[in-house]
Image (cartoon, rainbow, N blue to C red):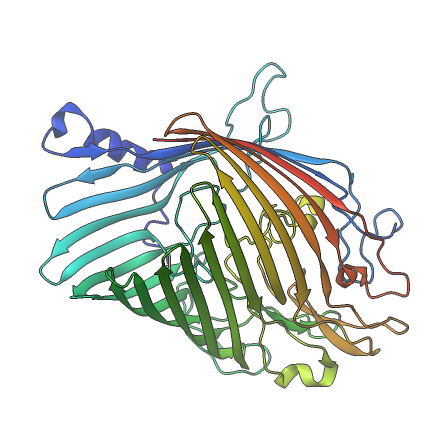
Length: 501
């Protein structure tokens, strides 16, 4: 149960107004924040065969429903306010107040408002509310710094937890709980207990429907211990974070699986309890910077053994005052095909990066099925069942910046084309039965090229634009029928403005 689930946005905002009033002169209020506005346009984002009306995807597979293909265009308005109340030398209260959402709300559109709620001559926020993505106190003691409340979660490159709030983050990590940061010379020790929103569950876990023993509790929780070594002289950081992740049977938070087979068990996620050992290293050597993160997970998900590995490496080289070159390599395990009879006892291995870890502009950023179905976030397309290589070159003059990128990716697993076997569909996050007469699926996810330009008006105002071409690979031919999907090259643009204060 969230610590602040019952607090309304209006109450949170009122508390900060009180803290900044004349009657609270003993308190200092420090404001920071970010305003963002952007426009996204995507051409050719569906690569499917034409299905009869009302039957967009009869055979499952990797079809994006045809729903007004070109173009998809949507905008976003978002304001983040980060006030900090300085109570005294040892105590401060932090917040990350959202007006709008960073991954939805559009110009001229408010999903929370009913149709024809206002006249044609005005646009209103309707039923939209002010929310607090983070709201926590920070207390400095002789033992270290305690945090209590809803806090941002960040570790390493951001494969598991990512919340740096520096750019156009969409789905930053946060959770309710308590943490401690304490230092011993060059070492920093960080234990924490984090609990995630899981609707209104108070009961204990029950047995999962496939006969597996209960794991965890009713909600979704992380029990964390992290150790970081920092040597500024050698310019090296070394860290490891251990996380025990548990949840009850009805929780689908933090869980990438629906372990049943479509048309057979049709089973939901079930309870889970597994460990993540997350290793991180950063090293600077002259003009070069090297970063790597490798999470290893093992345990149980819905009674199934869960064991997986993922990793990413970033290398940067500052060639001169203006040019910088980057390479980004990563892998996230998938879930292989198998006989349907093996599903009840099969080991699970799929891993999904945090959605805000985006190595590309079009391939691992936009969720084309969510755009077509108009459900879910249009940016929720994490790296999963994939291996990728991204090469970048950046030219920066101080005011102007230019970025060039090439990205190529292949799948870790694919459907084997054996009728009656099952494959794991990463779109639907569940097994699906392979039909007769279907060829084996290619592992080629495709490639893309991108160009980005940015202009800093001053230290606060940034204007940017990005455009790219994505050439989907044979992996997306697969729709579990004898007639494969037809490919379309995806062309996309993003124009944005950001004000930091």
